[in-house]
Image 1: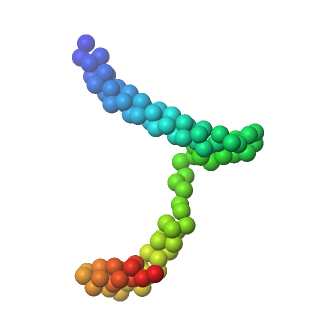
Image 2: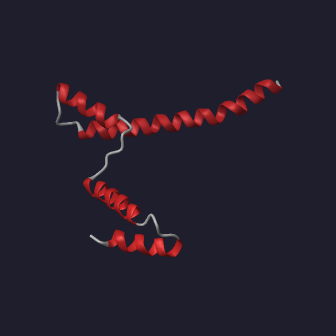
Image 3: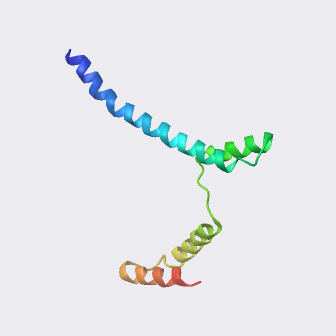
Amino acid sequence: MKKLAAALMLAVPFAFTNVHAATEQQNKMATCNKEAADKKGDERKAFMKECLSNKPKVSEAQKAQQEKMKTCNAEAKDKKGDERKKFMSECLKKG
């Protein structure tokens, strides 16, 4: 009886994890289906494959911010502490 109780205690968290993952996938599928409503055939297949993949989409603004961060970070390599914080803040505001 103790073994059964222990097995159940270990299995319960995994059961809820799988339910949560399934719900997320269902939500993703519903969203992708709505976005693909006007597509047909191979175009729809390709769209759904891309939409359902786990690759996050990065906007142009996010790409620009990442580039700015790289540049400022390279320029601030010799700075430390408050001096670095101040420099990074001013560098990232430029633009």
